[in-house]
Length: 157
Image 1 (spheres, one colour):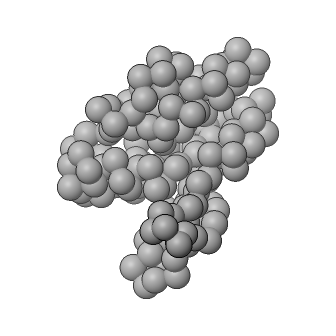
Image 2: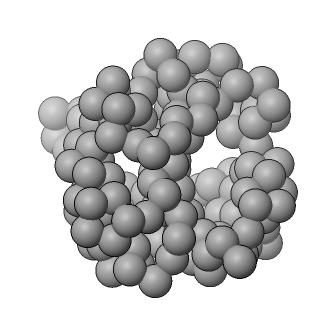
């Protein structure tokens, strides 16, 4: 059976689906589609934590679907910018799991992950798939993936 590891850059997916479609990503439908292709052995969703009720409900929903939620505190800088980047954490988790699965699925449009996909494909011979909003996903990430899946209406609420 195809063993699958899923890694979700929650902030990236939230902002790209909002900016491109004005809609939210449908995690339940995504899970249903992926589950039909194999056994999900790892499913991590990486997010920032502000502590508001709406966010707490969303996090609870992700856990109920089957995701392991990894949170970092939301940090508002004095210049108005915010910090809550999970790139290193996602990278470490992908590298630690790639040798134990057949398929790695990354939900992100961030081009910083292109070298990560190149590495796990060459070293572990995994199928590395990317889900992202096509017009907001780095070309280098699309090119590095074994397969790219554009997030469109079937994966939106």
